Structure formats: structure tokens, C-alpha cells
Image (cartoon, rainbow, N blue to C red; front, top):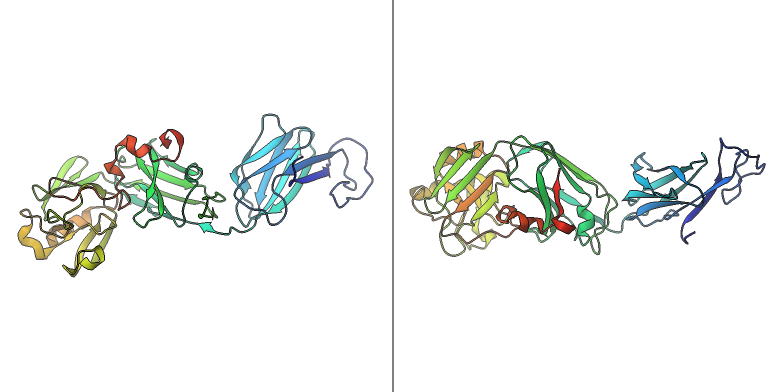
Length: 393
């Protein structure tokens, strides 16, 4: 038997044999009036200061297991599998930090044994921020986006615990990169835009998973669920200075706009973006985005497109240029009336594409939701799992 394991030999009831006649000793043997031969098991985790972050493994000295049950102090159960030879049981998930566990086992001769162990609290705990609140309705371009407090070195191990389930078997894949904040981030993007009406559930069974060096253990699971709303898409042409809004493939609105001034840092980002948030009336200060003191004003009907500060919003001070000249500091501006109507119509997660000449190119992948600028094969290659990690849910 391996060193460092707990050996239990307990007499079991409901089995044949003579009365041992003795009292239980310090090693747990004997059993008082219990009848039958002893059953010995060993567990790879022992004591009351066990390091979490690895599976529980229970081994039977002789015979075959018929049942192994590992439960925590709150009644939760660790699922696991008995090996083909019946001699070992291994949990599907790791032991969680700061948790009391009870191990109960039974063999095919109806003998049983039990033991306990306790994992120590994690030295460092990693946490996850999820972009889609539970119960939300979002647009057809919204990815599932997870940002981690601490570095994730064990990306494949973490990704294995992330599952997206959809009502129509939507194909998609996880992809890893750096968020605009500099933190590790993993997004799940469908192969194509979501279909309107899709129901989505995301399960993140991370409790007990080790992030790797510098990241710490996860100490809880996470989940969210949401629905895909109307198929609404926006396209801004830097050439015509107009924004076209389509719903279910039909054009419903064409809005004169003025986008970023061509050339230099005041040009707009181009490519496929996603409406990240409807922020309403906010203060926009050019000094916060590296554009000196060119503006500092309260702006109405603000809709965020990138973390670096590109928005669609009302810009009444620029009304002479709507539909004529791109002269903003990078945002897509429109009249108060058009902005109000547009703001009321759109939803977070709607795709927003900027085409035409005069942009400063695509924003960095983590500067908002930039994954739609990658081909499907390019995106799948960002999975930490072999073969790209393509999944259907």
C-alpha cells in the first residue's frame, strides 16, 4: 500500500462469520459485536490539513468495490468512477479547499468501511468575472467572456471544466487571450452569430481546480444562463457616413453619422465589434484616452463598443457633419433624436461593424469583443485543448 494513505480496516455487519468478541482498537479494527472479516481501504488524502486541488482516490486492499460515496460537510457529493477491476475509485473532480469530507465504501460482500479527511484553506483563491448576468437577453454577437482575477497557467485544466449547453446544439469554441485589463481571459464564441431565441447555459465547475503557479485554487463553481434576443445588426460605412440597422435581415433604419477623423489617433476602429453596454449619459474626457484636452463633456445615449473608449452616442455639437464628414474623436456620433430612438431599440450583444476607408484598423482582441474579426479556424486555435477544443452544446 502506498505511503501517505489512510488504511481502514473495519468489521462489517450483515455478513457471515463468527463474533470477534473484542472491542474496537485504536486502529479501528475489531468492531465489538460486528461480525465478519475486516475490509481494508486506503485513501490518498489523509488528515485534517490536506492540500486540495487533486482528485480523491480510494483503493480496496482485497475484493471489489460495489459502492463508494464521498460527501462534504454540506451534503454535497463528489461523483466518481470505480475502475474496471473494481479495486479503485477516483473522483471526477478535485477535492475543494477548506472542506470536510467523509468517505464511505462497500464491497461486493456487503462489507463497509469509512474514514474522514479535511482539506486546508487555499493559500490563494482565484475568482472569475462573468460578462452576462443570469437571466439576461443579449444580441446575436455576444460571446461568453470570463476574466480571471489571477493568472491561469493551467489553461487546459480550467477549460475542461467549462461547459456551454444550448437549446439548438450551437457549435462554438473557447479561446484564450489577454483582456484589455491585462488579466487572463477566455471567451466562448459560436462559429457564426447566435440564432435568435437560443437558450444558453454555462456551467463552470471550477471548485478545487488549480490555476497553476501564481494563480491559486478556485474555491467555488460558477454558472449563468441567458437567452438570445432579436437578430439586430449595425453597419457603419466610413465612406457614406451612414449607419444601417437591420433586424432579421431587413433594413429598418439608416442614420446619418459622423465617425472618427481619418488619419491619426482620432480615427475610428474598424471591423466587427459588439455593443458592450448601454451606459446612458456619461462624462467623456479626452485625457482619459490619450487625446489631450480636446474634449470634456457630458454625452447622452452612450453605447460602448470598446474598452478603450469608442462609443456610439448623441453628438449634437457635430450636427453639421452628420452624413457628410467624419470629424469626431473616434466615436460614431448622431443627432439627439436619432440617438434616443437607436438607444431604445438596441440591446447589449448586438453586432456593430465599421467598414470603409479612413479607420485605424481593428482594435486588439481583448479591447471589447474582437473575436468576430478572426476566422473560425483562427478562433478555434486559441483553445487550450488539443484539436482546437470545438464544442457543441
